[in-house]
Length: 221
Image (tube, rainbow, N blue to C red; front, side, top):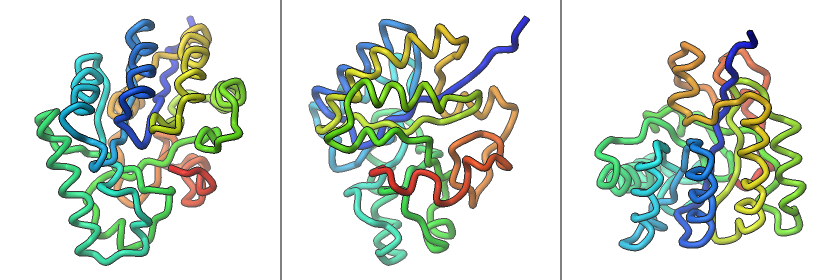
């Protein structure tokens, strides 16, 4: 019998009233889970309901900074503020401090690794942040690059209509191929690995070439 395969769909730049809701509709329909890396300033009285809904579906809420700026170009004090303020907003919804962080624009430096006490996640991108990328291209990008133990980088921001449409194809097709769609936390647990500091992860295996620092650097993040 073929062993179970696991993969994590991860979404940046929400919550967005339209596109996050559309992604959650698909996840709920197929009983799938995902991880959402939220921008703190996008969390308000209305959008926090979307984060609460994601949580109720078994999804994971993680940190994508407060203002989505190039954090490799700011001071240590500014980094701490970006992270802590977003942590506070998220933990007010989830009851716990996020363990994972996706750097805006997938830009990192040593100061970020030294200052931000979280596990850094990149993910395998499909250029879904580009306005010219179609839903069909996004779905193809995810499906052709999908491997057991991988984290796929997607977006659910205001600009992500095509991604929300692509998810309607991505989720059932991955399930058809034998994947269980899980959160990043669950992905590491399924691999029986504890994440390590100082790695920019796109795969749970710390030795995977997908984890190179420049992986996904042309993605918007």
